[in-house]
Structures are given as structure tokens and as C-alpha cells.
Length: 457
Image 1 (cartoon, rainbow, N blue to C red):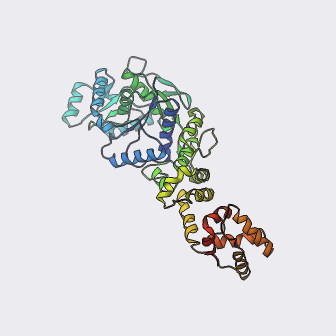
Image 2 (cartoon, helix red, strand yellow; image 1 turned 30 degrees about the vertical axis):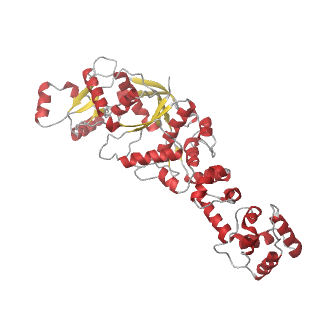
Image 3 (tube, rainbow, N blue to C red; image 1 turned 180 degrees about the horizontal axis):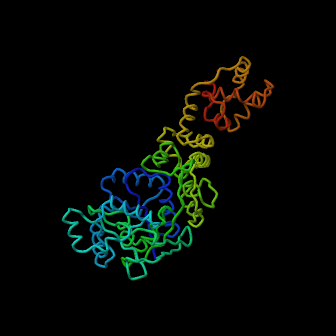
């Protein structure tokens, strides 16, 4: 069996870190099983779905390192769903209902007062031809419900009906269909809700594994029943825990909370996002993983906790720094060129400054300091100014070697008696304008003697 997975968001907004978690779980599972990854847009909600969001989602996925084998749009597959509806009607498991929302709400309230679960009572199955004709004469158009299976042979008297499956993440799972209303598959206007197109597409596209958030666990019981009603083998299901904000709130793509776009614009590396999105809320240690291949090796769906995982953006910056501090020049080179960092000094410059970067774009500040000198620096005390004058007088002649910093500070220490912080801090401030930063032993050869002298206070 070829492993085939799908990521199926509704294109009604930008995806956030929680959506990315689902996409990454599917992508890594496909990688580990040499399978296929289908990007499917559940865009049957014509009013809210927009092509610009579909394009943006694909861009975000590519940035993360996810490249779908195929891209599908449900809005272009309506005829396939129409055919499935006719099959369900012919087999008697899709039935017409004429209740208004107000009538349904009243019935739910009545059932509650009687101590019954507020599920749909299947009253539409008992309608006579005359009643249906009367509703139609009044201009009512039916919505269509899927008749959930029961074992009595009498749909008006359902017994306990349980759906079982072995969840890829959660292990053995059970949903009692008797606790659910028969789901509406087709609205009054003929448009489809989520369930039917999703199941039909999974069948038609050969989806073998459905990996998604655990807010879909109850839906799975209904969907397995629908797979069976369409004479199809259900896929293997896996439901991972959801991510929340650090304060425990749910994520929403409508509010832009932790959107992939915002994280990218904030200078976060894609593998920092992927590492935290995949590893948080699992038994794995959360650490910066430099490549998708290495992340796939650490990925195990069964290692995911059943409880929600809090996503702290501060953790992203920790991982981001770790990735940058170990990033080879070859990986950063093209992006540095775009930022204006190029030439023979680009590689030694990168190796010198990468350990002090929060974001790759921060390298520009150090490149400017090296080329133009400090943008501004604190005033020196009279003692430090005298010390610096003497220190710059001792600056060695060219050519400079890799030991120039050690040679120079050795002379300064011998001539002035200063050492430690009293020696290094005034020099760092004079050379860079900042109290901390990359090793001056690495920066000094890049400044050159002339560039160093230009920093003399």
C-alpha cells in the first residue's frame, strides 16, 4: 500500500503554527514512509474561501519546506460529490429534513427537559407524503441528513452503536454514534458541509492515513460510518494534540495568532518553526533540528501527548539562535548577498558573527559596523581615553595575521598594566560601539589596520 496523506485547510485565512503542526505531521509521516502528500483546499464555502489565501498557504508551506505532490480544490470537484449523494439517497441512508433552525432548537430544549440527549430525533423519517408536499408548497427546501447506523433494523429505535478504530496517535478509540445527531451533509441551498466532500475525496484520492487535530475525534466516528456507507475501506486515523497560546487560548487563523506569515516576517528560521511545532507536546526533547530529514528521523506520531501543548513564542527565539549559531556559510550565503554581505570577507565575517545573532538579518548591523565603524558609542572617561590613545599607538603594523588581537592586547597589557575587563571593554566600545558582540579576535582581521585606526577616539 502506498502511503498517501493530505493537508486540507479551508482557505479562509492565513495558516498559523497549529495548522503548520498538522501539515508537518503529515509531511514527515509521508517522508518516513516514502509516501505522497496531497495539498487539498476545502473551499466549498464559496463566501469565505479566497484564492489569495490558497496561494498564501502554499507559499507558507513551501517556506517551511513542504512541497506537495498534488494540489486539489474541492470547489472543482462538485460533480463527484453530487454522484456520491445520489448513491447515498439510493441506498436509503441520506434523508430529507424540513425543520427550520427555530424548530430544531425547540426540540433540543424539549429533549433536555426530559433528560434526553439533545440529538436530532429523526422525526423526518416519519413524515408522510402529504406532509412533505405541504412543506414544499410552503416553499421549504430540505436539508439532507446521513442516517447513522444502528443494529436494530428500526431506524426510529436506535440501540448503542459504537465505532472503534486504532488511532495512530492515541491508540484504541471509540465513538458512540447514539450520542450524536445524524449529521447534515447537504444544506438547503444544495451546498456541502465539510463531512461528505472530505470522505469522498479521501476515497477518490486514495488517502491511506488521515492525520489531524484531536478536535476531530468525534467526527471520525461519523466519517468511518460514511466510508462504510460508500462501500470504502476507511483510512488509518491519527489525532494529535492541539497547540494553544502560552496562556492556554486556542489559535485562530482569523485573528492571525502566531501565523506563519508573521513568524517569517519576524525573522524566524523555518526549521525553528518546524522543530518547535513538531516536537512540543511530545516525549521528544524540544531542540533545534537543522534539516527536515533529521526532523523526520525524530518524528513519531505515537510519542505525542494526549493533552494540549502550550506554544511559547519565546522558545522560537531560543531555537532560532541555536540554528543560526551553527549554520554553515554555504547555507546562509545567498541570503547574505541579498542583504548586501558579499565579497572575500563574507565567509569569515559570517563565521565571526553568527554566534551573536538572534535573526539572520541582524548580520547587516555587524557588516555595517565593520565597514563604517560604530554608529554611536558612549563617552569615555578621561582614564579610558588616555588608555585608548596609548593602545592605538601600539597597534602593530601590517601584514596582520590571525593572531593580531592576541599580539596587540599583549603589548597593551605590558605597557599599561591593564588586564581583564578594564582592558577589553574600552577597546570593544571603541571598535564596535557596543558592550558585547562577536570575538574581537575574529573581527580585527576583517577591519584591517586602516579600518581599526579609523576607530581611534
